[in-house]
Amino acid sequence: MPTRSYADQRTSYLAEQLKTNDDYRVRTQAALALGASADDAATKPLCDALTDANTSVRVAAAAALGKLGKPAGLACLQRAEGREQIPAVKSQMQKSIATLSSGGGAGGPAAPPPPGADTKYYVAIEITNKSGRPESEIEPLVRAAMQAKLLAKTGYAVAPKGETLAQGKKILNGKKMKGFYLLATVEPAVYQGGNLTQVVRVSMWTYPSKSLQGEFAPKLTQSGTPKKDVQSENILMKMCVENAIDTFHKVVASL
Image 1 (tube, helix red, strand yellow):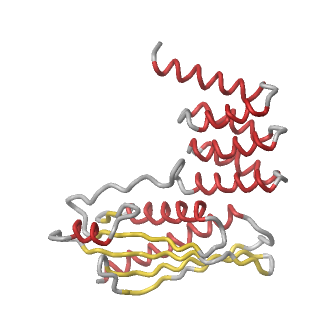
Image 2 (cartoon, helix red, strand yellow):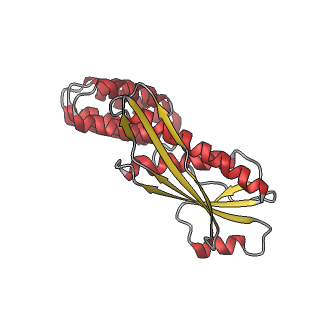
C-alpha cells in the first residue's frame, strides 16, 4: 500500500476513535497520536476534541495541536481557551497557543540557515525570562520573533541556539563579518488601570567578545485589558522585540 494512502487511513482511523470511542483513554491516545502524525488533516479532529466532555482528552488535544504545529490550529485553540474553565486544560491551551504563535510547532523556531557569501552581520541571541510565565512559552516565542526579524534584512545571519563562544569565534574567524550578541530580557506583564503594559529589554553586545554597545527597551501598552490575557501578552512581546530589532538595524547601519 502506498505510504501516503496508509497515512491518510491511519489519520482517519484515529480521528474516528477520537470522536466516537466511549473510553476516554482511547480518545486521549488517539489525540496524542494525531499530534505526532504531521498530517494537516489531523487539525480538525483535534480542534473538535477541545470540547470533549473529558478533561484528559481536552488536555491531550490541546497538547497535540501544539506538537502538530499547524497554523490552522491556532484559532481554534484561542477560541477554546476563552471558554475553558478547568485550569489544567486552560494552561495547556495557553502553552500550545504560545508555541503556534511563535511559528515553532513542535520544538520552537526552525534552525537558522548558516552564513552565506553575502552575510555581513552574524547575530547570536539569548533570552532571559523574568515574565513569571513558563520558559517553554516565552523562549520559543521571543527567539522566533527576533530570528525572523533579523533574517528579513539582507546581510544578516543568526547563530543557532546553544552555540558556544568558541563555536562563534570559529565561525567568525577570518571572515569579513561583524558579530553581535543580543540579550532579550522579558519583563513581567503589568495590568493596571484596565491596561496591559509589556517591556522587553534588548541589550546589544559585540560577539564573541561581549562588549556592551547599548540597550533598547520598547514599552508597549494595550488598553481595555483589565485581566490576564496571554494572547495579548504574546502579541505585545513580539511587537516589542520587532521594535528593538528595528532600532538595532539602524544602529548597526550607522557603525
